[in-house]
Image (cartoon, rainbow, N blue to C red; front, side, top):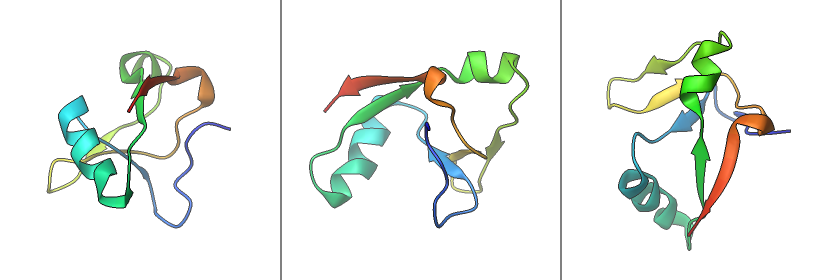
Length: 70
């Protein structure tokens, strides 16, 4: 299914691996996913930046996701 917003309005994305690891570590050992945002944008997906610098998107289809590890 990819990434869905679940109880949020958007899927939240980090700009780099260090930030993603820091945010993910709040809930235990993180698994880092790489999202091909460039390909998503080329396919017409709209991204937004929140006031605190978090990138937001409605959803991320599975074809744009790669597991990077922990």
